[in-house]
Image 1 (tube, one colour):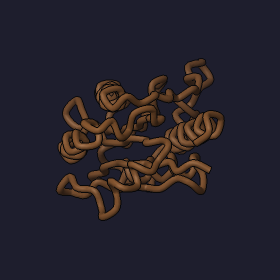
Image 2 (tube, one colour; image 1 turned 120 degrees about the horizontal axis):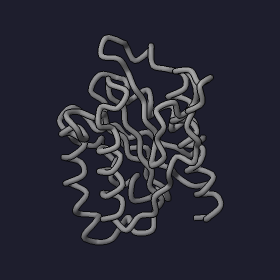
Image 3 (cartoon, helix red, strand yellow; image 1 turned 90 degrees about the vertical axis):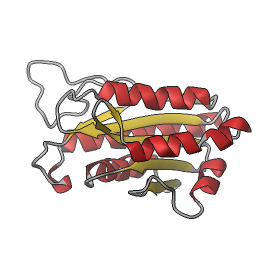
Length: 186
């Protein structure tokens, strides 16, 4: 079994719920690491990331990019970068915002480029979009993301009101990362 770390920031609980769906998909070896309101990891967080075979990155999309708390974490990851501690690990990413587009792709691109700077191997969504006339908002990958999982949470909706299809999209991303990790071995 491979340790899969899901490191994320969530401002209002929506991205946390998506992170949980991703971790559920990744299975029993997934460990959630929440970036706190000050942009810091919990005690042992950096050690968990070092031990992980795969790191799944998650942030809400605020103002066309990841939250400042996530950016603080990313900047702090220069220490493992300098030592190439995360080189050849698997990476994937997810994001959430209030609008159907909301510039979520920019956040996924940011997460991708962070992974590439660390010498990582990116795992995309691997899920076809729900783009037929019969598609509904509850379908998997209704937002049509290929590079990671995207979710939309209307600004007046609680985390408990997230779209089931978006959560399933996140779950499938976690499942895919776990399958690729198992295929590649530790």
